[in-house]
Length: 444
Image (cartoon, rainbow, N blue to C red; front, side, top):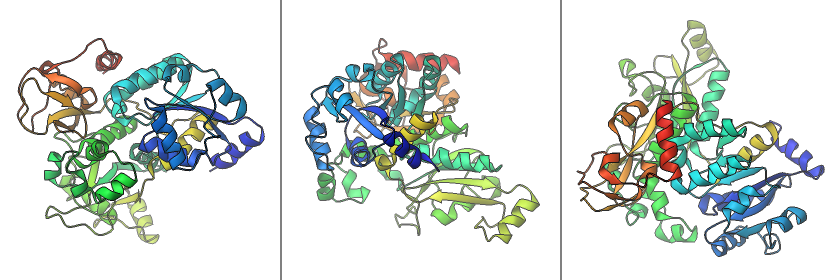
């Protein structure tokens, strides 16, 4: 409850939190709109493959040319301005920068960026949850070795869900389930970047106005991002994942306590202590009332008569048995909330969520019949979607993580709905991302 006053004190002392950011796409631009208003944070540098696009996005959200016109990182550090360039290695190596925000959305490249930052003693806030989903536990271990902090990004649903889980456990409650919401119908699994705006709920005109990336947004719609984020939640909280993937039980915010309980008690869970995603659409495609599509939630248990009586006495909304209740946030504000992570890491030395185990994995699942020789195009594309699986089963079966299913060629045909395996693709085994993943598999 003191982050804002602590940031102000750093500003008054002339000692702001000094950060650099790699990638200035949608999430990064949302952060840029807010950080310019926080005197306790100094964004020294932005590195992007297209500096011109980064500058355009900064102007788009209110930055002036003078604010981001520093000719070098050194000049930015000395004058309180920001340098925009394309050299991420120079950015992570710069001595004035304490925290690096990885914000590219490119999981293979993100691994290089994150480990590079660790090598220079920088803390990292990882917005690219796709990277965290397939090797977050390994990144956390590497951060420990480097004696730096590795953190999820507050504002994204995984970190917000972890916050709710931590609240429940810190209160002494047993967590029955936790997760996020989603607009889901089974046929959305087939969606492509060409069809996403037909189903998402935003017109093509508004999508273009907001500079929205159709492939990225399609990764949400086709189920890839819910799987990715659920994996990240499971690995940060220790919650389990469904044996056969997310079930997307239907229900609104006030239905969570009923639907997110074990099947044996009338709910949708295989057992207590799992991640899941609540669908905001019925199977007929009708919206549910008071949905939690853009939000996060936790369901917790009143396992004693005393706790259940307290629920009644204080008019707590519960399931029909009076045993389970929930807490939720109906909205998440994505990059607009990212300053919370910067403040938490920079002022408290505390991550806003970090992988502590390897419970969940996201396998690349064929979106249609795929022929040998085709090139996989990763999450949100035309070839594969993400399927959440227990990590132990995924590793044992040799499933290809969705995060590594980028620009790799198929050696074998894969039927629609079937998982892709490492043995099915031509993959560069010399990349840092591949080697880190294989190292993580040995840890578990």
